[in-house]
Length: 483
Image (tube, rainbow, N blue to C red; front, side, top):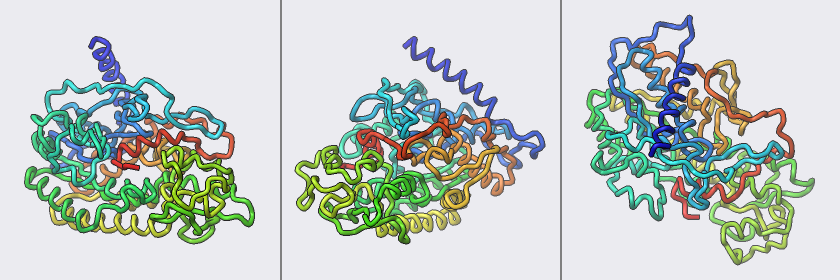
């Protein structure tokens, strides 16, 4: 207990120092104020993107740069009288991987390759569990839109098939409220950010369309989102609500990194043979990544990319699929032969991309309609991330792109924003808040937020990130995948 108290004190001191470094507006900028608005309590509702989850883990030094925590700091600079913005902090190096029990956080282990993954460190522990009220950051990694009003106990969600202990970490006890809505309502916020729905398509995409085998249906999503929004507005009729829509999954490094790295490894006259949606046997579909709508290889395939052409069945062994499915012959060249193709679970093929894109479009149509009907401000994160992928984004003297590691915007898991990315996201929300309610909340100073500690110029090798296949089991856990 004494060590924990000291750790909390040190963390608090570090946060205070950081606040001084990353919240100062530019000297020549407009005067900071809230206009005619009043903000006495701010609550953030969402999933891992809201929680500050980064590089495959939840840990305090990254949570410090969650976009809601940064927004809270900027609100205070503008005159908001909100109390300490409380988050369910997890001590560094973060939560444990469910398989190894060691810290799940990805780090740069070697510049040769590069090699990225957990270091085998002892996992951290929750730091802020003594808080007697609800957390202001109610972002729950792995949450889908259904979870907003779901009253299923935390214990049940921590077991199969969800296996998600983050619900217990964030919501903690039913006395504080049995649902996310109940806990948010209890705090009586006059400002709420609401960003849910990403995981209703992301789990499908990151698993290569395998588990789950489809996104949440558009009709079910529309019904659940409407119910969630109606309940939120009814509970907080006078609150200022800011919602964000769902970025297209193909705009993130998780899907755009491996294919371009694999393309040069394919010999002349040879094609990558890959399984399309639902196929677990021999495959005649092929690509050299030159056609329109070429398949996207997920980052989970990085552990197998260097095995292309080898007579191996490592993927099947790692997944415990023994013997391999009928029609598979692992003595054939992996990825280059119809009988030993690149697996469906590591591929988002053209049809799956269409399915994911259609889901995102449908979800965003629902979000836009309800935001307008319920008087909520809308942050178009889909347009923003699409633009970043196409053109990059400059802020704080740095050019951000959607490239893995070197792009600076995303963390080492290729899905969640980096610390600087958290600041960039926070500023998108702040811009909309300022425009909607005539506020002058200062922008987060991106230049003062730490970068990913990677000496880019010293990375050598083929550029394919070597991430242990076992470390991706944490992704399975986060999105409730069973494969």
